[in-house]
Image (cartoon, rainbow over all chains, first blue to last red; front, top):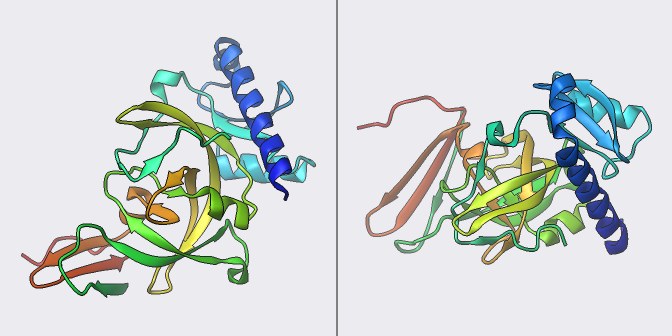
Length: 95
Length: 138
C-alpha cells in the first residue's frame, strides 16, 4: 500500500464517519446496539459481533480500508477511549 | 502461565520493552519488533504511523480518543502483539498516533490480561505474568 493509497483510505474512513453522524438518528432506530458496516454512504450489513462484521464485509468483496464497522449507539453511550499519556499526540492521526 | 521480567540498570521513570506487532491473524513472519512503552494511563494501545505504514495496516473503524487536550478522531486497526515471553495477544483494537519515545504504547487492553508488577530498589524490575492469576504477593 502506498502512502497515497493510505491517505485515500483515511479520506474514505472520514467520509464514512461523517455520513454515520449525519444519519445517526435514523440508524439508531433501525440498528441500535448492532455493529454496522458502512461504505459509500450506505449500510452494508449489521452484525452482533465486530470481527464478524469485518470478516463478512471482506467476504462480500470490500477490501479492508474501504469500509468501517462501528457499534451503532448514541455518541454519549460509546465507551470512551481515554488516553491520558503525554507520550502520544493524536492531532494528526487522520492525516 | 508465562511471565517475563525486565531488569533495568537503574531506577527508571518509564517502562519500555521490545514487543512484536503484526496485522490481525497474520503469520508471525509478518511481525515487526518495536520498542513498546507500557502505560496504565491509556485504556487502549497505540501504534505509530511508522508501524501502521510498515505493516500496511488498514483501518476498520474510526473512534474518538479522549485526551487531556480534548478528543481527536483516530483510525482503529486490528493487530496482534507478541510479548517478550512469546505470548500472543490477538485481536487488539489499536489507534494511531505520533509517539515520542517508542513505536507502540501498550495500554490497559493488554495489561488487563495479566498481572503487572514494578519494583524499585537499586534498580527497576518490571514483571508481567499472563494470564492473570490474581492477588499481589503481599
